[in-house]
Image (cartoon, rainbow, N blue to C red; front, side, top):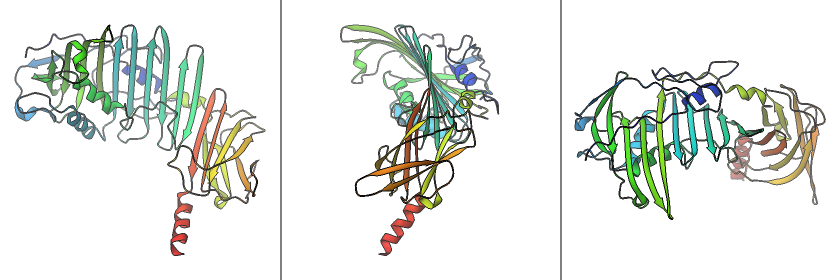
Length: 399
């Protein structure tokens, strides 16, 4: 197989992440790599990218072949390579970026994290038919915050114990980074094409100059791809370009993946401070729940929340329990302030009451949920007292 023609790297939106992840209480993630970027706004692609000097060698020993590559140098298992990549970077601070271009449309996804899985930060920026949309999601583990910006409008989501509504991009996502990395290889006939020395690292170079005979790859009429992979399977760069004929339509697709390591993660994105950071918890020995503004900005008065509840543990369900009605705040909720909700149930109805101070109601909450919109903020908060559920199960088992 002849080596494919080397192409110039596609512009990668790493700078988007590094700018929008800046925090008033910390510094933005910064890379210790030698690649540098320059950008002027939080939703623009990199305007200037400098690639470290590379030295290619035709020599690569079998011992250097990454997982998924057979002894003959052919990549036979893209899933094994992707698994090895994420296992090797499981405790590594990183920014993982995917970009692809189809016709006049451009899409960029990023996923960033520190040495632990949370907090993490993901973005999705696209330009389609000249319309630009920017989505950003930040997760602390229990809480998620998202911001979506479209022309002339910005909306926010605040989520607790649920991310079904947000566009978080993680390895657990069906079409997340793992899926993207596998797809970077399955459409081409990749094999080892020497090694590359760059930035003090030795990479195995994988190249492809024709499509692989996959069920959907048969629609590809041309294909060129290059990847730089460490011997233990960490993929630092992929670039591919192909022409696809399908349904009497021909289109060219260019895509790339880059990995930045050595990221200094020290705080949430600055726009988190523009959001009333609401949090839900069960209090008063289960006879009330609390809605507290833990930080950010003030929640204006007349914010309404639809209440659902259950006397069983149901945190793993998106929809659960009975609908109890709606509560509406009568005053602004400043950071640090809280309101309390109690419920009552009789044979014919259920009702909820909002209180300014802690109050015990007749209904015992094990799980509670509130959902509401107060433009430009949307809330979906779920909490459950798992210890109370365990106690209930122990009592039931004793009987």
